[in-house]
Length: 205
Image (cartoon, rainbow, N blue to C red):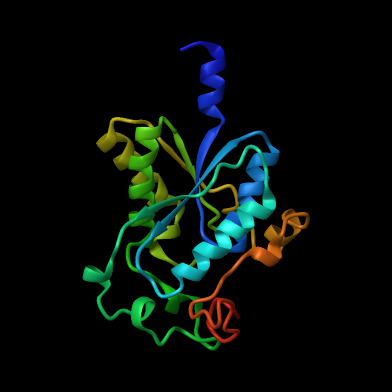
């Protein structure tokens, strides 16, 4: 592989994309620093995904950065596993509930594993996530991601990194970083109403 090809490979990254602010700002931030960004959205069959996906597409269209590719959507239906879980049937945790209440079992295991296989087939060696500090879930720790990186790299025979550039940041820090991007086109809600935020779910709060 020549030097130019190596540089191009190094500067390609998949981004775990949702409709929310953290991954949206990270997409813009990575592109600003010269990365070729491949945003990937994984559908699980959850109650908010249709609206969230629409917002993700609107955001990327509004961002319009030449280094940010169109959204790739992967399917990983979880109805047979999640069953009547609140994420599929409701009622969703409301504004009075703690963040721990919105835990989705295995979400990061599923997200990263699916996207990692896609990356290996696309020749991409890194996945970036907008996970912030203070995340209370067991699949959001540094130890978890380190272990998962090793297992996936070994299982795919493809060295891949899982990078969390905002792991030490809080939401306000992300807002400041993204002050010049169309944040009004982001979406964080567990129970969309009329195609927008319900104003009452944990995520809205």
